[in-house]
View (cartoon, rainbow, N blue to C red):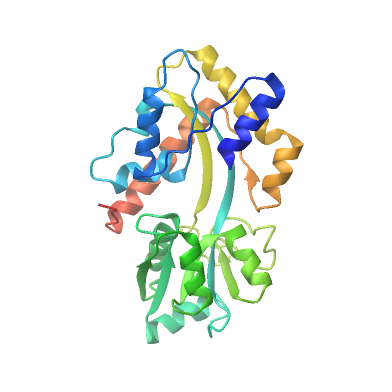
Length: 277
């Protein structure tokens, strides 16, 4: 979605064609390899998320690049918080009740897969609260949410937009936003900081980078193209309606942010011995 928004914006403003080449897999390694194969005189942007630019380098034993040195940061784009959901039928109506219940009856938590955002924040939650939890990885958000709604698992950390629709439909309950602030789509749900859990924070952010050797003038031009896309009212509104917040940084700010996030996830992954290999 973010890549298409960037391409749409550039083409509308400049008339230049933009090719969006989806290369999923390997936590961003396949996309990085494809970017390196683009001719040197063709401007290219690598679009990814917090995993692509932060956590994945520590989840894979042999990652094929270092995002901090092999990429030139452009900007973050949009972001949304992860939320703790439980089935509508679950007896707990608060985080305190959930943690207390887990000590008498161990709980299962679903995630979008090993090393996913749901897995990382689930382990942080377990460590911070002492809740007795077992991880159940799925292949993506949809099947994890489906089993959560069917009460096949006890809880799930997922994006605010992905779960808010199910909360409104009465299929899930939201107990906590994993962040410093409440979410606009779920204003009645407390943030983790409010609940005394400042270390349980997970914002799914998206961003863009280019080749490390890109000249400064091109870096600035690409930064402006990407930033303008998400500051365009039409595109900004589209993402806001999905629960995303605009998150624009300068290349220097994003580089510093990427370094900070990488250090944070490296510590979490080492502490809880998380791996995808």
